[in-house]
Amino acid sequence: WGQYYTAEPEYLQRMFERGGRYLFQIVDDLNRRNMPTDLALLPFIESAFNPQAMSTAKASGMWQFIPGTGRDFDLKQNSFRDDRRDVLASTRAALDCLNNLHGMFNDWHLALAAYNWGQGSVQKAINRNKASGQPTDYEHLNMPLETRNYVPKLQAIKNIVARPQAFGINLPPLQNHPYYLAVPIQRDIDVDMAVKLSGISLEEFKQLNPQMNRPVILAAGTPQVL
Image (cartoon, rainbow, N blue to C red; front, side, top):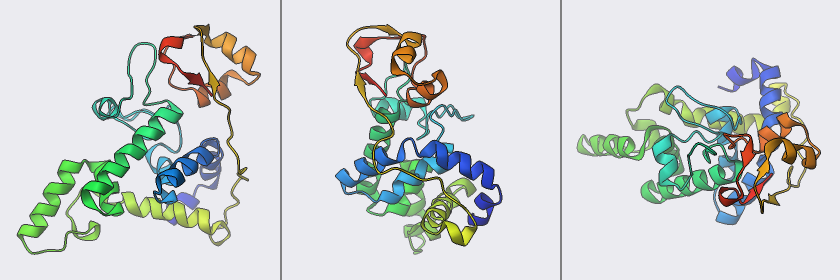
């Protein structure tokens, strides 16, 4: 998988530049929760760190929540906003979900498999192996190819980040501070006006606030914009 990713260095560069907007905050959140910081790289696998990504299974955002799981983790979805695409809300939900899965399986590889395949599917695979006297770790479970490749893909990205020179890759510099500022919203405001006041481009604003479905930001459901 390391060879797969590094075969397209331009794509890898774009992916890392995009991810650089969000990584500081995600790592900070993981550190506060005492969770492995490797998990900050998971959106590279899920969505190439595109917060506006939508899969054929209707999974949305950089952490790729399907509608039902999004609602389970308090991600609002209505005609005005979809918090599955909200940078901060979806990160909070993803880390809550991963933490719950780790509590359930007491193993990060199995937690990741469950994040991709579903906790029920992983538990059934474990039960099948137990019944036949086989090991119940990630490597020995019978699982779909996508799930089988999920942890190896994450490991490949981790290896590239840890040793870019070994892969012939130059990673873009990442500043050790947040890329964005969270500004509280106290009254309804048009997106165009918010962009004008922010002093950044519409494209940049949408990358930081991709949850908006309408050209107006409602203060009642939007505590802040980035």
